[in-house]
Image 1 (cartoon, helix red, strand yellow):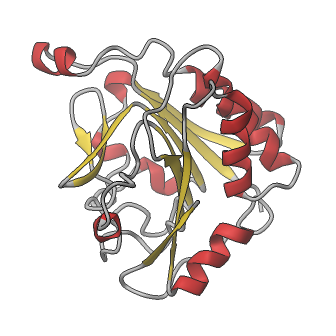
Image 2: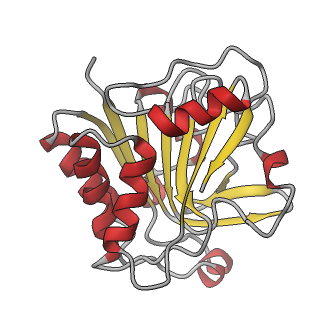
Length: 230
């Protein structure tokens, strides 16, 4: 089976209020572009690239015929934030709340959120945002940061390093954490992974074993159990 991927990013934000609230991300295109290029080199199929004003919530919202549902892996780079509402990816003119949007009914299997703050480790109830039936059965793994994410010329090389690690046989979790360690500045960019399963054992198995050659099948349960690494 050929693995298919898509890449999405936002470098600037629309409207005077939104543009003032969210600074321009000069290098946000680099990690997704490196990810897409290295995916092609590794034999995967790149199905789409969307960015800035052309990257809209409907592309990833599971309540519509979403573009993200057409691929196995999605790589997203933009601003991100976590609060009482849960995690939001901040797009050019709207916010995407993946846990509430019905993301991953059949695919993608893996989403990489190359953004700040996929989860807040200081919130003891962080799981409540993700253990909901709107998280689709096909979505088995999220990769991201439990910290701010640096966006620069050097750190954006993680997009390429991630695929290089996958191509040599690493699991998704090892490939992501290894790419972050390899490219981050000292003391920055704390990698995190969230796995969704029918049980804690199932989710833990996804963390340990899911790879390009071992893509996990959809869940059977309506609401997932979430397990985090580390």
